[in-house]
Image (cartoon, rainbow, N blue to C red; front, side, top):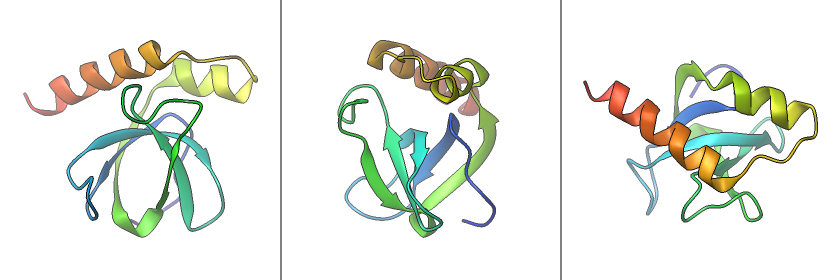
Length: 93
């Protein structure tokens, strides 16, 4: 994965037990790790910490979620899950 990840960006795990799974970037912990959520298994209260080398980033950012998180507002797990479902359906068409 090259480049800098942004909050609300769509990523896919390329290694580990969760290989192939899609997530949204919840936060960037440091230059080598990102916190990820999917709204189901990985909820906002326990995001997954993953090395950015093990992620495939897509040039898609969910603006609503990004704005809410940067403003310090609460984003629900349902909102994250629905956004991911829509993005994944659009990617597979």
